[in-house]
Image (cartoon, rainbow, N blue to C red; front, side, top):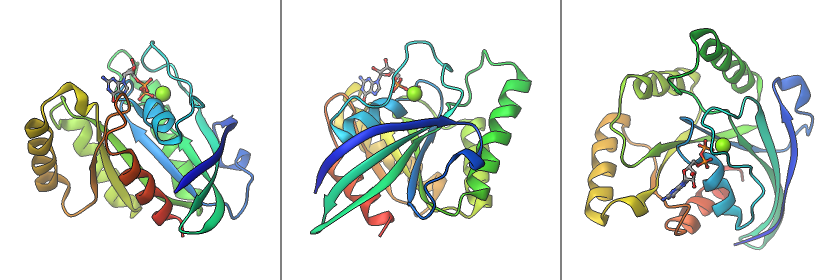
Length: 197
Ligand SMILES: Nc1nc2c(ncn2[C@@H]2O[C@H](COP(=O)(O)OP(=O)(O)O)[C@@H](O)[C@H]2O)c(=O)[nH]1
Ligand SMILES: [Mg+2]
């Protein structure tokens, strides 16, 4: 398993701007500041995704082109970094705009194979998370959970969080990761590559 090349493709707001017909895609969703962009950079071992110190700054869907070698084959896919939701300072109409943009992009995108839903290990599962879970279920899209920032808690706390989530989200893949320390990187990357074959 080797990432050969990774580059920023473009920022878009609408499916018509996507192009790249036939190329499989895996998307990253989650709250602002949860660590989506950092996780993408960790997976790629390159700083291609822009991380920002101002939460809620990303308002576009950012597409990255990834060339890799996996199980003896060379391929390329798109990873998409979605704008973070649930930033409380955002006015309601901005939130609704996010929902509409992401919802229609995912609904109309037949090349998205899986969503990686990024959750912060230290946060409790709240109303917004339940809404997200309902929405993912309704969309009938395959998704997995990446519980990130596990470097901030003990190993047993991270495992407890995983158990707790399993009872809430049901039988879906859950990965414990740290973008800072690289924990769980190989497992999640292999899972992503397995999702697109
Ligand atoms: N300790 C720690 N900090 C992280 C981790 N991942 C992200 N961060 C920090 O969390 C903040 C938000 O990260 P970012 O990737 O921009 O989040 P995004 O808004 O979801 O894309 C940044 O200050 C990161 O350095 C992690 O695994 N461990
Ligand atoms: Mg980001």
